[in-house]
Structure formats: C-alpha cells, structure tokens
Length: 159
Ligand code: CO
Image (cartoon, rainbow, N blue to C red; front, side):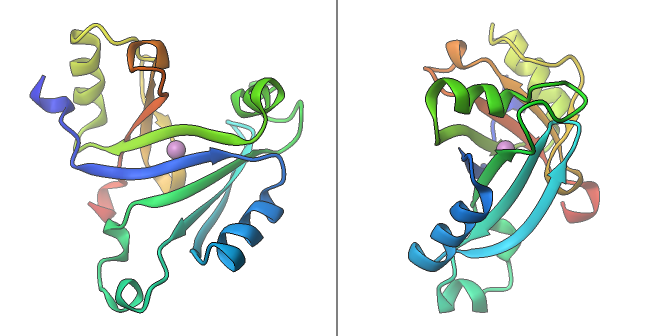
C-alpha cells in the first residue's frame, strides 16, 4: 500500500473542444502561463500544460515542481490509432469540463500494483506514454469517488 502514496498533485486536467480558445482563455483571462504543447496521436489528443505565472513563481527555480493545469482536446472525432479517443467520447457525453486528477508517484508500476491490491480497477496492465515522456496509468473513477485518477511517473531524467 505504501507505494501508492503520491508525492504531490501533478496536474488537474480539463477536457475542451477547442484547445486554442481554451489556451487563450487560461493565459489571457485567467493569467496562467503556457509551458508545453504536445500532440499524443496514440491517445488522439492535443494537450497544453499551464503553470502559475506570478513573479514569485517565475523567479522560483523549481517550476517543474508546480502542479499544472492541463488542457486536453481531441485531434478529431475519429483520429488516433484507437479510433474515437476517450476524450472525444467524454466531450460528446458531457461537454467541456474537469476530466481527471493526476498524482505524481515515484514508481508507476508499483503504485498500480498497490492500487490493484486495494481493490481499485486499473485501466491498463502496463503504463502508457503520457505528457513529455512520462509513464501513466488511470484508475477507475467508480473506485475513486467518481474521479478519474491518473498516476504519473516523471521521465527518469527529470526526477
Ligand atoms: Co493527465
């Protein structure tokens, strides 16, 4: 069980139909700072990562340790190797909105094992590729008080 204990919140993810409009809103109106854009064709999504943009945050050396806001958007209704992405399905059913909570763990394989040991359903047997080379698994929302939880292990080089 102890291996599941996360180090911190990695990101909170919002599913959006129009990524460019959402990025403009969260940077220009809310005032977050865009730090990363990526297309994950296997998942069939484009995604953006945003961080706090206060002087203090920008002066702080450890931007990588800040929890992020993630925006995810389907590339197209039937794009991606998996066909219609889970995000497109989510948007079709519920529209824009909070999609998942990502928790940073030291070892995603051990954390997934610990989750299974606790009776939580884990969506994939082996970790998938997440943002910027991270390794991720998702926990079933019905076993987590209605919240889709992503466990994320940072790429080795970034700790
Ligand atoms: Co995520």
